[in-house]
Amino acid sequence: MSDDHNMDYNVRKDPERQHNLLGNSVAAQQLSAYVSRIERIKGEISDLNEDIAEVYGEAKSMGFDKKILRKVVQRHMKGKDTVVEEDALVMAYEEAIQAAKDNMIRATRDPLE
Image (cartoon, rainbow, N blue to C red; front, side):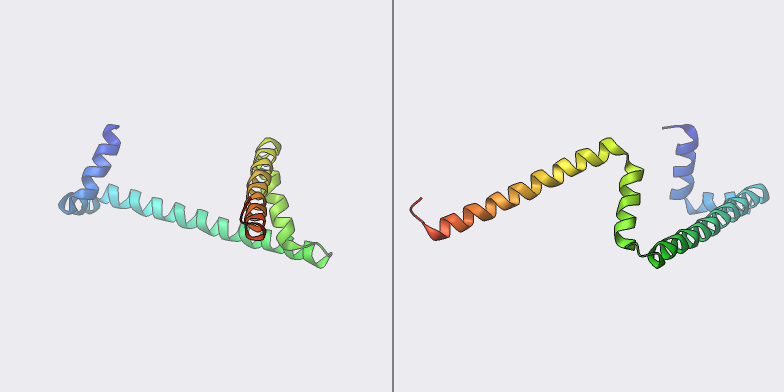
């Protein structure tokens, strides 16, 4: 572990050290700056999420299925190799489930097999 990480861990575990750190005006200003940056970024994320929702709404108004469009976007972002691998696994699982169902049906029809 880095010294910085150890210091952070030690400060979290010791309320008196937290109080002393936050009593330091430089540390308090840094904390305030971190909070402000995080709030700004979260606001940007919120704005982007609203933009994405608008695009999905536009697509829906043109007759596209939003649920399917979301899946297409997710798959597109994963990359072709990942999608091919996932599709192969999904098919294998579905085939295994169907084979198990078929075996159960056969076993109920003719218990002697």
